[in-house]
Every structure is written in structure tokens, then in C-alpha cells.
Image (cartoon, rainbow, N blue to C red):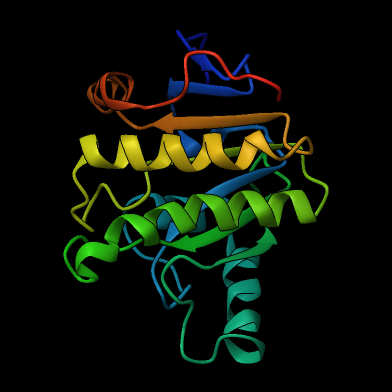
Length: 192
């Protein structure tokens, strides 16, 4: 289902924004906009669990039993198998529910991107694909999320050379348009 599409690139081609299916991305890791239980859900979370198969849920159950018995905290990230997905791994992160953390919402959303990229780099991964974290049922305004995510990604990549490609995969063309209009990537990145 990955037909040739128009892509938009930033940071000398290290970041690519496109419309597509996050579960069809052949990258080292896809990021799951998970809920705190890590047991699957709707939207991106449901699609990743459904298309990836039961091994993802089994890995998440192991994480809950051994590392996060009370659930994965907002902004944190963990790595599991990708099961039947074309990616090698899934990085699960829990985005903020808009309004729950007040003025800290943006910091929690930025942490999702930072911690996912950090986990990928620590595991020697070079390519990662993100959905638009928290912009679905968690109610984060797409315009604000575009600014927060682009700043967080640019900040991380400015001091990292492990990650070669970051894909921002939007489910709909309208979501991609909103991102392109509100992203805040520097037009020219110096010294990186």
C-alpha cells in the first residue's frame, strides 16, 4: 500500500514528512502512540498491534511485568519487537492527553519524540518513523503538535549523528498539510 507519494524534507534530508500508513514503513523502528497500559488500543496503537501480531503484545506484557508494573509514564519510551511489521522494532511512547498536565503538555509531548529518538540511537538504529503523537483521541491540537514535534526532533538531531532518517507519517493529507504549515524546523541547520 506504499505507493509513490510526495514527500517533504527538512534538515538536509534527515527528516521526511509524508502521508501514509505507519504500519507499512520499512524502517528500523516505528513509533507507537501507545496508551499507558501498553496493551493496545485504538488508532495507531490498535493498527500496530493488529498488523504486527501477538508478539508485540507479548513483549509489552513482559515490560509491564518486569519494568513498568504501573504502566508506562507519559513521555517515556520502550522498545519491543515489530512482529509482522516491515520495521525491525516498535518504540512505544505515551503522549500527553491535552489539558491533563496543564502548562507541561508541550514538555511531555517533546519528551515522547526525544526519548524515542534517544532509545533508537542507544540501540544503534538509523531510521525511525513517527505518527502524529497525541493528535487523535488525546486531543492535542495538530498545529501546536507540529511546532512541538519539529522543535524536539531538530534539537535532538543537532547533537546526534546516529539517526540518519526520521519519517513523519501522517494518516491523512489534511494532517500533513497542517504539519507543513505549522512545523518549525530551521530552514538551514548549521554545523550538524
